[in-house]
Image (cartoon, rainbow over all chains, first blue to last red; front, side):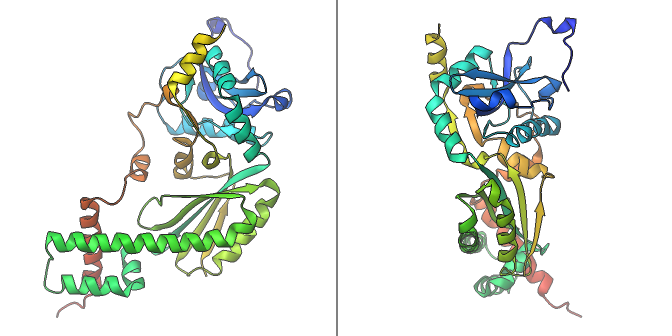
Length: 269
Length: 74
């Protein structure tokens, strides 16, 4: 919803909160009416073949509060539905619009290369966790070696600290092997519907697999169907959670260092 | 056969946090996230496993499964 400018807005804040980078050709047709952080209007800042999607911001820092995180996600969701885009991480604030333009100019090639790589694709998330609330009970039953080691150590009361460390290490090795084997099985299963995949660290002991897949937009249904089929081959006490489509967060790898932006700013007319 | 659930549009905060805090484009000097008050969930998600403390914690958790399985003495 476009807001009418009011008198107190005449001192426009200099800071620009960044959401995404898109190719210039989509800018004219982009609908950006989702309110930005603190309700600010979302708009493009253009340079050459690129545009950054930003909103004005007064604050110098931002806390990762739920409302801010969901605003950031909502703006990205709206952009993603309309155009190829590279998501920006939460809480990135440029000092001015000029700094944003310098960033786009300085890193144009990187941005354009990554945009080409993700164009027409979305990110899907896939997690597998144990549906058994007692994860350790599951592992002890699944790995007879672990159970034997436990019985051996705990037979006569509390084991020593060293024995416990040994048991813990043994468990971590088993767990890692189990996670890798399960992830490999999933990766094999979704190979035909995913262009790229990234395996991330599981969140806790109950989680077995945490991965992201870059999937062509027109194959999202096929991806879901494939995962459904894959689920049928996995043990009953596994819960598979598919999320998405997401902006391609896991497939946008751009970490830009300060010095480069500084130099660009100094060199600008 | 595992249960498969597909959620489109409604994503958990954990899934959002997993992505938006450090993935995507990051401009080092422009990171203006104040970590004061950051949600516990995020911190938990970032705990790196494989420390001595973790080994001990796991051993205790495994030991407890023995207690749970042991027959109660009468």
